[in-house]
Length: 266
Image (cartoon, rainbow, N blue to C red; front, side, top):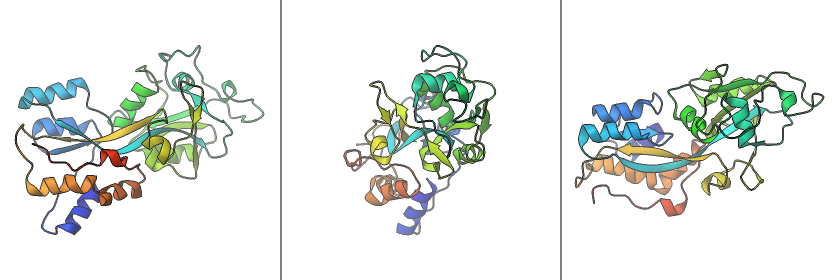
């Protein structure tokens, strides 16, 4: 959001936007309170969040997909583990095994021969409750199951990546845009038994199993149009320049078919 705002200010020096980043959970609250027009989220609104908005205003928020991203399972860069299934990921991070795994996975020898990776208990890292990444990983990777209580929670994906990169016995989940050479993203085995490596192509076409949209929610009454400055902001997001900003930030641009001109209120 900040980089889009900077680009808009460069185009139109008289336009200034204010941004506050506190995690996806803060966006619905701010929208309902009327303190913002735009609410960026890394996950879809829950039904409860949507209903609170409707009860406050009498109409639903506009939901716009503005970029693509993915949740990654990362290990230390020297870890030889080839891939994971969703059942294995669930068995590693959850207590409930709602994805159908036969038993919990707690130690590296449950995944690899001890002579290949003799590091004992798997040290887990993830995001905190305020993040959309936390909720989405719970939904998509744990089949809405319960997280283990011994997962080290971090306020940002960069902290997860740093922790895993420093610990040979670690595994974590994080956003694609924070991937760096200190860690390795594990290919995930899809329902057909094919290991899919996260990449721009597999995230853009949704073949990587933990791909996701990034959203912008807009508070706009039916039949009304956005003020010119705010409309210019949306047009920038969906322009080639706006999607180049997405890519420069480490996210995945929308496919061309989703970059249509946008005029809310028509």
